[in-house]
Image (cartoon, rainbow, N blue to C red; front, side):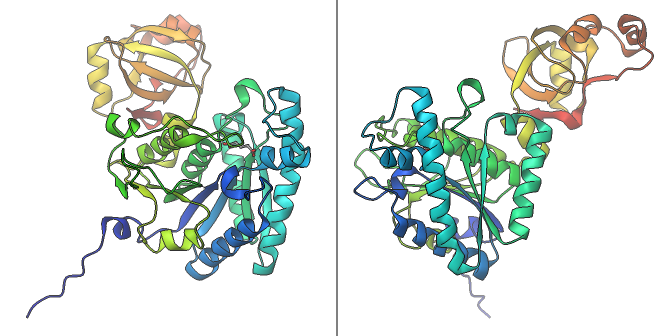
Length: 377
Ligand code: GLU
C-alpha cells in the first residue's frame, strides 16, 4: 500500500504550532498618505489580531510605533524635531491619540487595549523584567491586547532604545513567544533586483549586503534595524517574519503560511527563558578573562571557578551580567557573577578553601559564575 506523503513547505512547518506571537507595527504602516494616523489601518489590524486570538487561540502582543508621528501631525510639524523636549512632547501628545484609536478599534471585537510604556531599564533589570512579563500575562488573561511602546516622553539617552523593532525582539524573548512579526511598508527583504526573499536561512554578510540605507522621516528603524532585531530573536531560537503592514489580514495570512514577506529561520539551538535574558537582554557590566583550562571547562558545561580567572575589567556587582573572555580576547560565554569585581580580584587564581581568609567572610560561593547562570556564545 502506498503511503500518502503531504509535502509541507518549510514556512508552514515552522509556523505549524504557534501559540504566542509578538507583532510590531511601524509608524509609516499606521499612517495614511496624508501622514495622519490611518484609523482604517488600525481597525484592520485590530480585526486581524482579534481573529487570530479568538479563532486560533494564539496570544498576541502588539508593539506599536506611531506616537511621535501622530504627535507631529497634531502639532503640524513637518520635520521630526531635533530638539529633545519637543520630541518628548510630540510623543506625549501622539501616544494618547494612538492608544485611543486602538481601544476604539478593539472594542467591537470584545478586546481591551492595555497600554504599556517601557524603557531600556525595564528589560535590563531582572526584577522589572519579570514584573513586565507578569503584567503582560495578566492583561492577556483579562482579554486585553497589550500595546507596548517606548515611554518616549521620559526616556532619554542611555535608558532609551529608540527602536521599536528591538523592543519587540526583547518582548518576544521575554514572553518566549514562538514568532516575531515585523510590519512596515516594505514587502520584505529584497534582493539586488528588488525581489522579496521569501526565506533567509542565516544572517550573514550576504544578507547585510542587501540592506539599503534609506529611512523614513517619521519612523526610526529601517531594514538594518529590523535585521538587528531579528538577530536577537533568531539567536534565541525563534523565527521572524518581515512583511507589509498595509496588506489586508496580514497577520492571519502569515500565520496560515502564505508566502508573504520574508521569513528568517531561527538558529538551531533554543535558549531557555533565563538564558535569553542573560545572553541577549541583560547589560554586560564587565568581563573576566579566563585561562585555557577554565575555557575548556566552560565549554563542557562546568561552572566558572576563581582558579581559572586571570583578569577582570569593568564595574560589576553580585548578580550583574559579565562577559567571559578567553586568552585571545574572544567572548566565549556570558553569565551572572556571584561576586563584585573587587571580590573577584581578591580570589582570582585561588581555590575556594582560601576564600574565607581572602574575603574575610564566613560564607562564600564556590563558583564565581554558576553553570546555571552561564550561556555559551
Ligand atoms: N517610539 C516611537 C514612536 O512611537 C517609535 C520608535 C520606532 O519607530 O522604532 O513614535
